[in-house]
Length: 84
Length: 408
Ligand code: HEM
Ligand code: HEM
Ligand code: SF4
Ligand code: SF4
Image (cartoon, rainbow over all chains, first blue to last red; front, side):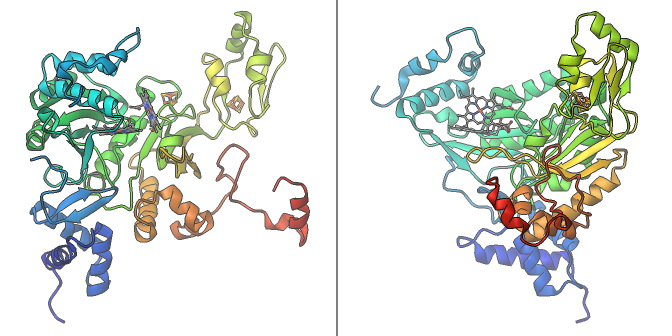
């Protein structure tokens, strides 16, 4: 492979993971990071890159942090408890 | 009352409003005169006391843009009865180091909160934060933007670095062995990402105490306790010691007699301290502040691993680094923390505090992974080291003999 891996590519791959897992498993930032490093290889994708990708997901509002006993990353949605 | 609506009457809560001591009911009632949220809060609480059940639900998704911490979601499960507390989210606001405010700053905080929330505060939560109790989801961003405009920020919650806290330290206290305020502020700024963007297995708390009196109770409440201490001898002003005796203090009994190491002696003229045995407990210094003070070679002792879970009870942190200089930019401390985080993030289970992690993997393995040499100073209590095992002292077969002593 010749192309350099970009933060946005990692963010997109993370987003897909979160989306696919939605409703079945809540993912933690560390789950995403481990999966990305395994998928792309440690030489191309490191912790710093994963951190930046998560930042991009959150700041672009594609994902939100949630808290259910621990902190997770999810697609924004209306939660059951909300009294809106 | 069948529907528990209570018609504004709260006979059960009223009982908590009697007597001379402070009462949260009294305070909520005062707030209820101006604020409908506080009024419904009283109603819902009365209903809870009647039904003997809590009427709150957790909200896991509320927050402000970009942050994973600082807002704790709560919803009423009886919003039709108490519409004004249908949402009742808590906001943690990062307090200033050492909790120093101008009255202007306090008014600013209260003004923001009266405008956008219940007006009820908790100054301060056990995290140390300024706690704003009760607001609606759509008020979160306006509150956040007004707070940041005034120079305040949200604190931590969830699986992140929690708002670091510090004792008043050198600002008011002569015993401070390092500048707790400066370190607390430095850690807060250095770890902004870790504070606002939860990425750990669970929470991680820093608490900074200037001396072993540990006024922020860091040994019981923080994953990383940073407690001031000294290496050299306690400074003694013999004339001032004598003065204490002349004013009636029984030095031999009440100072030397209560020294846990029994390393002091008073002959009526000279106070002798065998500093090699002193465990830096602060007792003698607390008893005779004018005569004694910590030594001159000062720094901090780092302890790791405490937590205070409600069900199992507290676990105290134990010594990781017996002495470290605490001067900006605190690189040695930060390097150590980052090594600990790397390991714990990689190997820790969800909701496993670093102290529990160490218990699971064993201190030996933990130390090896963070590249810290094991040392007999890594004690849980003075003179009590649960980890270090002197293999050389035992011959084969000794373990059996030990069992027979009956003390395990
Ligand atoms: C029997 C019921 C409850 C028990 C035993 C309980 C226990 C606790 C304890 C021990 C703490 C830590 C103390 C502190 O940080 O100051 C805490 C914190 C907290 N509780 Fe509860 N709680 C109860 C009900 C509630 C209710 C009804 C609410 C909200 C409507 C609530 C919201 C919170 C919040 C937001 C915090 C964090 C406060 C802070 O940051 O200091 N709790 N709770
Ligand atoms: C009327 C009953 C109670 C009152 C008035 C009360 C009051 C308090 C106060 C004032 C604090 C300190 C909060 C702060 O630092 O901001 C606190 C903390 C705490 N309370 Fe209670 N409490 C009560 C009942 C309980 C019960 C029943 C439990 C457990 C079953 C409990 C567990 C705790 C714990 C674990 C903390 C946190 C300790 C720490 O981390 O410093 N409390 N409580
Ligand atoms: S912990 Fe020590 S230095 Fe800090 S305020 Fe208490 S007595 Fe003073
Ligand atoms: S600090 Fe504590 S252990 Fe040390 S000499 Fe004083 S009383 Fe004894």
